[in-house]
Image (tube, rainbow, N blue to C red):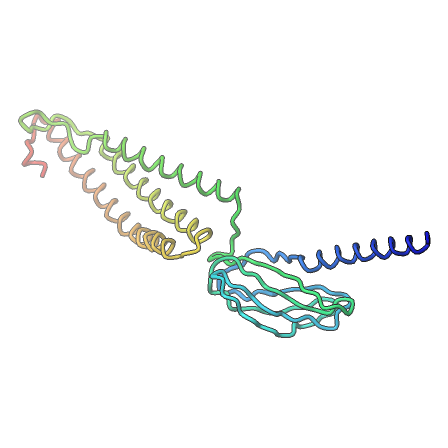
Length: 254
């Protein structure tokens, strides 16, 4: 009687262990990582005693289920399937089936598709957001201080020129610096949107602003230098007049 009870106990333990192993095998998940949109993904599976492994299905980010039922390519104990339909952004699930130890078993895997191939990372997100806030802070700060600077010469109430004000050049430098910061803001914002948003329309809009502003930078620099040289030439002329005791009115400096 004791032997029978012992045998039942051993069988129960073996059955329990096998059940746990099968549950773990069934619930196993393969994490492939994050990839770029439209790239081909190598779906992988390792099995040292399978005669075959099938890719059974793929679930797309929009919850569409596609049944593949195709043999994976075998190389030693590794099985591979090249999947290239990655136009949708988001989280993909796939399921494989093989005869591990002669028993039909199933494993699941997953991967993410983003526009740039970057994964959603807390450290990166904090860094990008902090950089964006710093850029916005300096952008507003420069606008504030440039508005405080004089943009023309010092004149009397009647409009006569009293002195040449060199601070207007500092104001123009600050405005150009603000322009460059604006370009950086558009670039960082578009990068954030491309990396972390499922919809790329907003990212494309900000990237378009970035490209337009970046291409306008060279013509703006040319016009800026022409304006500076013109102002320097005009200021020298006005300063000579002031040195000779001539106080030009507003019409002289137009």
